[in-house]
Image (cartoon, rainbow, N blue to C red; front, side):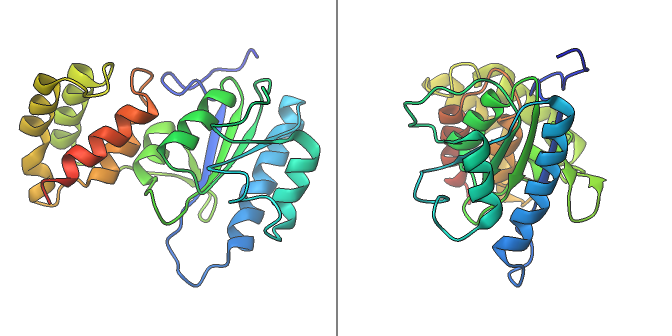
Amino acid sequence: MTADLHPSTHLRAAAWVPNDDPQRQWDEAIALAAEWIWERSEVEEIRPVLVSNTIESAAGMGHAELDEIIRAGGHATPKSRTRYDYGPVLAFVPDERSLHFAMDLARGYSLSVVEGHGFALAEWAASAGAVNLLTGQAQTSQIPDDVRRDLDFAILDGGRNGWTGPDERAQAQRCLAEHIRTGRLTPDQAAAYALTSSSVSDRGAKRLRELLARNR
């Protein structure tokens, strides 16, 4: 691949469908994400793969567009034994683990994401330069600049080790706890943003989210 890649996610392009309307049917969100990834697939000359948290959470659920991708390129989960080549990916309602897996699998290619109920992805989308497929516009961040600086410092300090050490956890609390308490940052926002850093694993992002959730 010779196209410019995102500096931290190493994706060629990214898009998402936010789960921001309880009246929106899953088929509508899936159709938008699938249409976009098929267009990217034609440009990148490789069939897309579906990624979900589990096989059961996506396959055989009656979503024709997902089934079409499965037939064309395959269906992968973080626990899959089958190894897939890098290529365009549609990630369906991912958690931290499957989103991180999808980003790895799509490295050098394109990734479209359908957001689910359990993990808010707006800050991932903003940091990854993802297009909101409902509006056609690039996602913008809602994290204030001073909060982002503190979050960047917490990631620099503890992200590579996944906030496993007591000093790293304490530093993250010192940097971010007040922002959580005052509503200027949510644990989901912090974890989603952290996932776009090449130094943060899915376990690290989840650990950060759980750590910060104690301050609510």
